[in-house]
Amino acid sequence: MGQDDERLSAAIERLTDPERLAEAELTVARAAPELQRVLAAALSEGGWFGESHEAETLKAATVPDPEGRVAAVRTLLAEEARMGMMVGVAVGWALKDELTNTEDPKGEG
Image 1 (cartoon, rainbow, N blue to C red):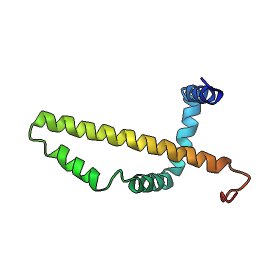
Image 2: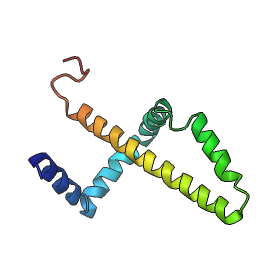
Image 3: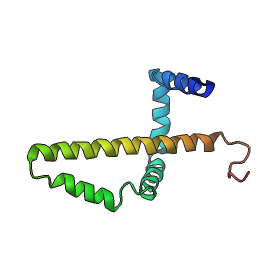
Image 4: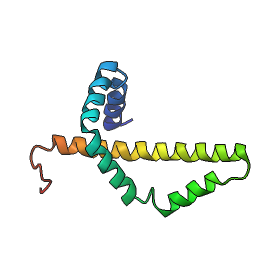
């Protein structure tokens, strides 16, 4: 495991501290409306909620077998949650980079 991987693992481990996570949750809660807009734009631009998503939603909702329909909807919801979390993490990472970029806040070199 490289030094960066070790630092990442240690940082993730520190997030299990309830006080550290609570501070992060408060920060996110304050920024939630703006972050929601950025997340929605990122998901939209990535094609995650376009025509293919609509088709998958319709497909899951119209499975003839009730048990199969519930399973398909659950799968779709789980995939949406995973994708939202992954894109959300990417947005958070980019936001952290923006907040720590003190040399050039506009990102112009």
